[in-house]
Image 1 (spheres, helix red, strand yellow):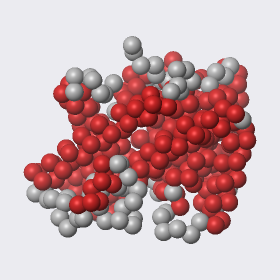
Image 2 (image 1 turned 90 degrees about the horizontal axis):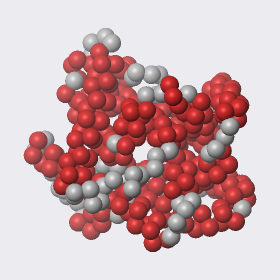
Image 3 (image 1 turned 45 degrees about the horizontal axis):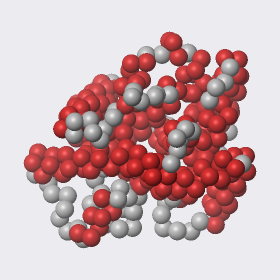
Length: 336
């Protein structure tokens, strides 16, 4: 049976990954070459918005996918298969690339027991505290795995009263910012992102089947709100300065996708969405190599835009080739 796709969520997923790649490309050029080589002065916003939209998107997608024929065993099995085979295979490819092409070993001086963190997909999340074998996936992967584990419990209470669950998660995150004193970056702490996750669940449960008029009203409202946010940013509040722009852009993109669906390049969006997870896993490794290789070229005026385009093309080309090869090897028994 062909897997059902929600075009609006595919659209958000595509843009989210592009935002994150754009953010990390600018980070790489600043770190490797010069502070003057950013493509956009406020590129930091693209990273935080992209990540926030991913948390919202995850809650929304899980809510839609578990509306019918839900079972706990089936849910965890599907999440496991959606995350770990590609993660482990990508990790192996990166290790071979570093060992053979770059003549570097990622395993020197590591405590072998910490490789269990890599197997579990939480090595990036815990890398701030524990030196381990982290290479791909970032902190976000471990964070979202924990939220996936919690989803059945969240879903149970959400189905009882979605309004109370949303309000409670909001109050919890606001309070948590005031009392939090752990070593982990607050934005990495899984429970601090629970409101965004639940907002995604809430949004699709109420607004998934809007009329054309309602979508126009949503688009107008959120556009005005985005403009207001950038005129009056909430720099003093970590929670609101991350959650609000993520929510606004998520609603904006969903509204745009519903109103202008027939005008948007569906094949391109579906392609970007389909290979977004592989691109997310591998983009750091690829863009650092491209930026390093192009170091001298990037010093020339306006060449930065071209190199970014090449980087983006390389990331998705490799993601497509790698995914297709792995799917062929596994004979489609694991990957969709």
